[in-house]
Amino acid sequence: MPSRVLAVQLSPVHEFRKEPAGEIELVEGYGVRGDAHAGATVQHLHRVKKDPTAPNLRQVHLIHAELFDDLAELGHTVRPGDLGENVTTTGLDLLALARGTRLTLGAAEVQVTGLRNPCYQIDDFQPGLLKRVLRRHGDGAVERLTGVMAVVTRGGTVRPGDHIGVAAPGGPLVALAPV
Image (tube, rainbow, N blue to C red; front, top):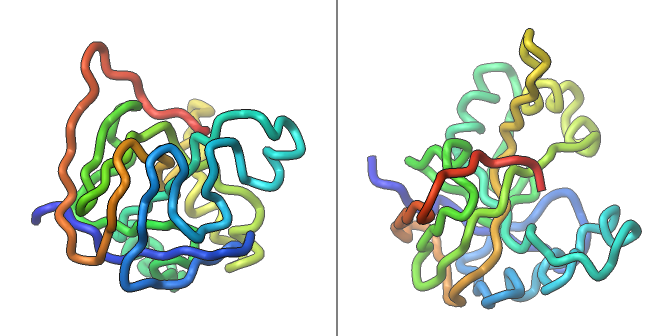
């Protein structure tokens, strides 16, 4: 199945969920126009308290819709936007991408910066969901399943149904880590 955008979402206020939209506009170096997390510097409320001048490596949040299918098998109903993502994808293993991968989404392009680190708010949304999306393995390794974060490298409009192009970064591949 080709990789494509399944849904797009945004929220002008800092809430856990983001509302579905017919399209979103990505602005280079800034994020999703009209979204509370857009900005050249960090916008996540917890991170702003630590260092409001830090660069915003979380301008766009992407989640693969296949996660929703996996969660449904475990008794959780999750729809696009429910976990706060701006772009819901299908047909692309986001978690396997290397840091620096460029994704073409419609007319726009983003560069993957790292993994989203899920927090307690996920259990506020649905009790027990955090342990489903933040898995600890026997060796102590933690697997984060709630998608990837990116910065906008070329602005443009993104709509459901848009094809997703993938370009690996040059040089040695670096695995994703939380940002």
